[in-house]
Length: 102
Length: 102
Length: 102
Length: 102
Image 1 (cartoon, helix red, strand yellow):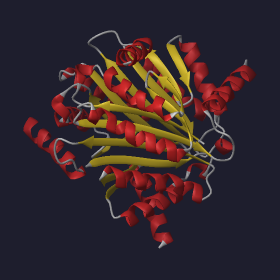
Image 2 (cartoon, rainbow over the protein chains, first blue to last red):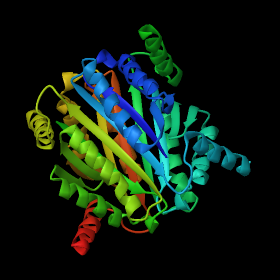
Image 3 (cartoon, rainbow over the protein chains, first blue to last red):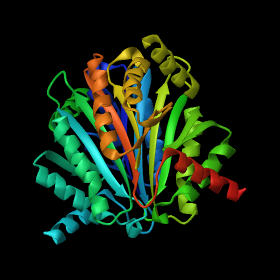
């Protein structure tokens, strides 16, 4: 399973305010049924990589559908196959380390 | 004020398990006193850019101090100067848009 | 047309030396027939986005096929639809600006 | 020595055309005297990390000085300390691997 962060940024739009475009992308995420977390710097998705790729492809299209002429999309994939790999598991591992060091 | 995401990843280390290194970086964040949010894909910082740069420089050094020979660090800066710009404000803008569209 | 940069980085492998994995990814790029440029920080692809997505999906799989257990892939898409958008065109625009400023 | 890629993107500016801002950043790079390579997706710098950080800080400021109100900057650091680490060396390693596989 993969954990993937994505942000889609229209360029030349919105006088710096981009929440309309972010909300459009997020609606697609909610419709997908995938586990996700919205953060101040992008949306984090969790699931099978092929499902995530299909969603990411749609999300990138969303600002164009809302009128943008140029879109910059950043995708970071963290894919681990030797054991279960989830957003919650990653957070737990760091938390445990912090407690050990105390 | 800037909102900045950072992840420091040692390469060739840890057989895929990197939480020890993440915890080391996070301790520096906690000591800095800056507002932050830990996410499954990195740490998001908020504050004056010069303070953030000084912290980021230290964070990048942390895996080397813990034994790594090579470190890949990804930094994404979102810096807006026409109005207040915070993690909470960014989240609120998207939330308001989502509610308007309902 | 889109211009897309991709880097696939296996984690926990190679004692810091990753050229074997980069070469494996690059072979897939060469077989694809897409226009590309290898840089010291990743491979830049140019073409129709659906073709690029199909290639990126294969490239991300390549380090796993070579034995990696965890792969971190970073993809940055620059997609512009109001006019032709190529690697050569982007370089030319910057060059012209530099000459105007001289 | 570190190899670092940077791109500074003003948001809400330029109707999608950003070469003016890229050229402004590049002038700072040229004045710095650091080894660099301009690519269609950003500028790659090579050198001591503290020098690079000082330059990156200036580059991020450049679009604001040219009138932008919001700037998105992406920085990727590849820092290796077990042996010499240069743009040319990274390219050579991949080239050698490709030839071995032929």
